[in-house]
Length: 111
Image (cartoon, rainbow, N blue to C red; front, side, top):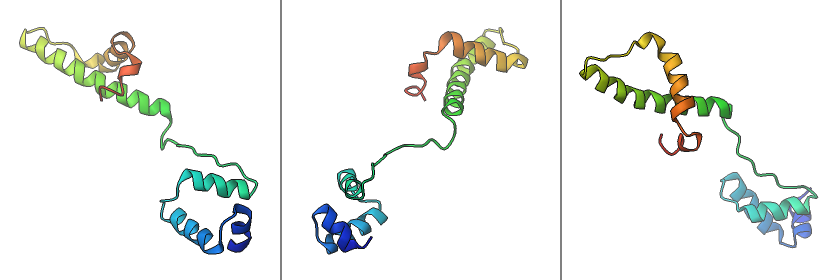
C-alpha cells in the first residue's frame, strides 16, 4: 500500500503519512497515531512489554539478592556476638528466609 493510499484511509495527506513513518522509525510515534494507522489497515494494535528473561527468574534473583543482603547483616551481627552461622547451608537458609520472612510484594520495592 502506498503512503497516499494509507493517508486516504486515515484521512490525512501523503506527506503526513511519511512524517508518521519517520516518527515511527525514530521511536517517537504516539500510540494514538499507531492505533489510527492500525485501524486504517484493518489491524489491531497490540502494545506489549516482553521480559528479557522469564519473570520467575527475575523474581527469584531479586528475592535472593534481598535475602542475601538481609541475612548478611544478621550474620554479621551474630558473628560479632560469637554466634556465627554455618554458610554451608546457604541455599537452604536463603530459601527459608525468602519463604518465611519476605513479603513477595515488597521484593521489588526493597531492591
